[in-house]
Length: 216
Image (cartoon, helix red, strand yellow):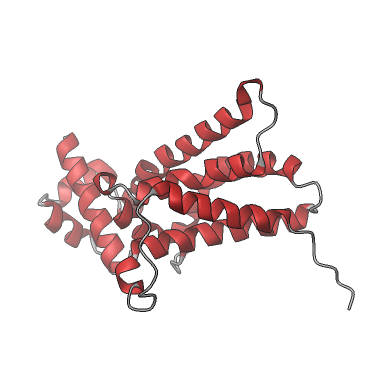
């Protein structure tokens, strides 16, 4: 039973990542997984439910890791409040570790996640946003005291700029072979720490930048 379920999930993830959600039919999934339609309906009921469970399977452990890192740096061991950099690292490190881990299918899942965020299907985007609700709430609350110079509106936008920069960075890592044709003199990052340190430094500077004056 569990083996059948896993085969369906693995087949679906590969097809969705390669072809997209609307272009992948249930019959394609069952054919690749080598199961019948009855098995698909028994385990998932529908294609939408399969998509939702696939995101939960991947994103729940990722977001638990983020929250655990945030808890750890907030506990601090008596060292005071966490720095802006520590909070940003807790948010960024888990997805970078995932994409650099072939055993967890990181590259493939990040391609799938990119398709989901850019999907014209609002139901799919809603599934994704639901997975991130607690993470956004916790990290927004943690960042607030570190950013007293920012209004609530400005902090909102910079949080989403952070998400965009991180998402693009993950895309760059996943698509490095194609980017080599454009940037032949830039070596591929070999370590998770190398990517995390660069991105945290960039984002911390952005968060600390004062609100631009509207005066001419």
